[in-house]
Image 1 (cartoon, helix red, strand yellow):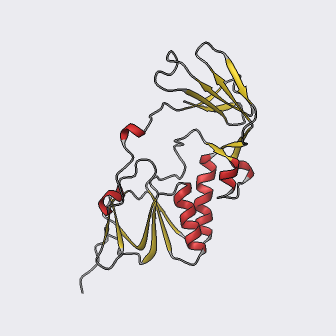
Image 2: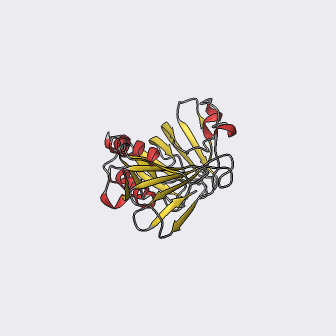
Image 3: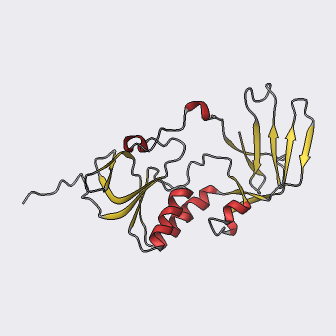
Length: 224
């Protein structure tokens, strides 16, 4: 009999393959596994949740509808927003729905762990470069290192750069004109507000956009 190629893993036989282990992918894997389905969760990063790629702000109601928030995920409770005009006039808006600045570096790995606790198999450092559907209805995910992973059902949770669905006729990626790029930094300063987001406007500071400061609860903030 022909010996298997050690560089290419055989089809896993998993019923569900999930590409991307951010909150959407991890939760999809968790619920599928909890329902008794065999799940394989694939992630291109070696470390889940890093580098952090967002301001980490989330509305409490929408967050609690989907996950049971653990206390150490919450860097800061947000109860107000400060809007700063180009002439430095500041307006505070206190009546807003409560929000959190969540620690994605803690939350994302824990959500993956929740999926694994429900029975999902997780593999990090796997960059899926193409997907195709066979005549038998199964989906094959091919990784950059030659490995392949097969599932009866496929969930693509790649994020804003999603491109894999095009080959399946699932629509185009997000148009470039609908994507706003930003500069992002984790900063620490004595003026970081507590319990309040700051939004700064004006072409002298942020031409064509706005600046934002999301406090993280320890004197630091996400700024961009």
